Length: 317
Ligand SMILES: [Zn+2]
Image 1 (cartoon, protein in one colour):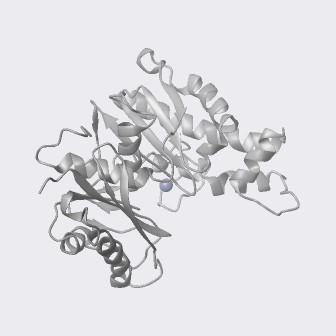
Image 2 (tube, rainbow, N blue to C red):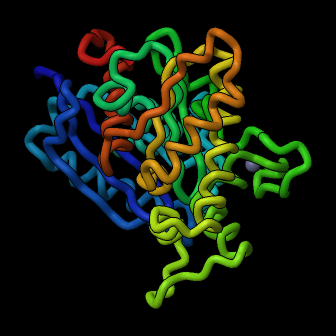
């Protein structure tokens, strides 16, 4: 049988999405379940098995050569286990072994969700053609991944590029990860909103206190909202500059809900980069918005799976 497709899973705290994907990133078949995130581990796994079962019922399933999984982290790709923060039933859960069994023995490649987004942006999106890139998701949390030397760099456990939890404020606020002053603690959506509220910003009649509402206020010129985004932008800029200085990336791609704030975030971010990315070899660093939409996780998982095929040519990830 001609195996020109891969199966892909995107596992998050709210939904488990699956697809059969072709060598150009086209999604041919989809399946989805809500994540029973508060249930025990095997109940969560049953939802994954249902998604795979639905894909396997497609006449195209026989053309799938491998299964790629992008999962909320932390993941441990070397052990084949996952421990997503928002899925307490999965702690060191043997996802790869269970998914391989449910997928009829297909080879499985597991990566973290930030790495999956990065694979998607490199393959089909804003980082296409860039050999050294940092791709970030700025939303409820801050995640990311790296492309180095033209290839996805997941690291031994699949978590490399996790920029949300590098510290940019030595004595800053404690972060749920255990450290202090992490990029995420300053720049995530909830922290942008929290800081705006603490500074005296108040939501409109709809009571919306999300970062998107703060972004709208900033766009309208509210100085407290503007300041909260500028603070987030400085944290992101410091993290991006540190990454660029360490490994010489030439582009940073910003996606996620907060990334959609556009120039409210990107303009102060680009300005702050000139303060932090100062050495000659990082001064040309550019920051651009992500191009991949809601399918980024699936497409990235597919890219990772394509990379596992013995005759991988379609996607050099
Ligand atoms: Zn942290």
